[in-house]
Amino acid sequence: APPPAAAAAPGGGGGGEAGGAGGGGEAPGGEGGGGGGKAGKKAKAASRAVVIEVNTRNKRKHITVVKGLEGFEVDLAAAAKAFGKKFACGSALQRGKGGQQDQIEIQGDAADALPAFIASKHKIALSDIFVVVDGKKVPASELGA
Image 1 (cartoon, rainbow, N blue to C red):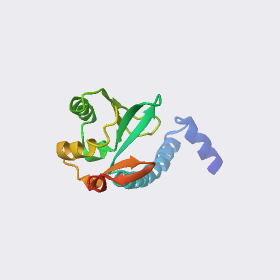
Image 2: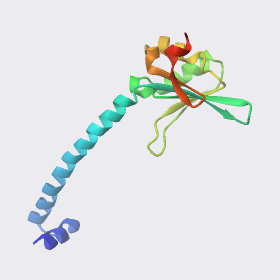
Image 3: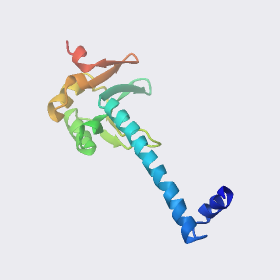
C-alpha cells in the first residue's frame, strides 16, 4: 500500500482520496515548520545587538558597516539617510543577499561617534551596541569609559 500512495502523491490529481491523504501528510510537515519558527525566534533574540565594524578598502579608505538595527524595529532607509547627514558622507542601505542580514554602509570611519548617535536617535541602550575592534566585539559602553 505505501508505494502506490507515494506514487499517487506526486501525481497530485490521481484520485480525490489520495490527494486528500497527501494533503493530510503535508499538514504535519507544516507543523514541523512551526518548530523551525521557534529556532528563528532564538536567532532573532540572539541578534538583538547592533554591530558596528570598520572595513578598509584601497589601503586608505574606510567603510563603516552597521548591522542589526532591524532587530530594534528601526527603519533602515531612514537611518542610512540620517547617518549620511550626521557624518556628511555617503551612506547606503545594502539589502542582505543569500540569507545575510541587511546592513548600512557609511563611507569613512564613523565608529567613534556612531554608537552615541544610534543610542540617542533610536533609543537603543549602549549595552546593545557592539563595535568590532581588532576582530573582537567590544560593547560600546566600554569604549566610552
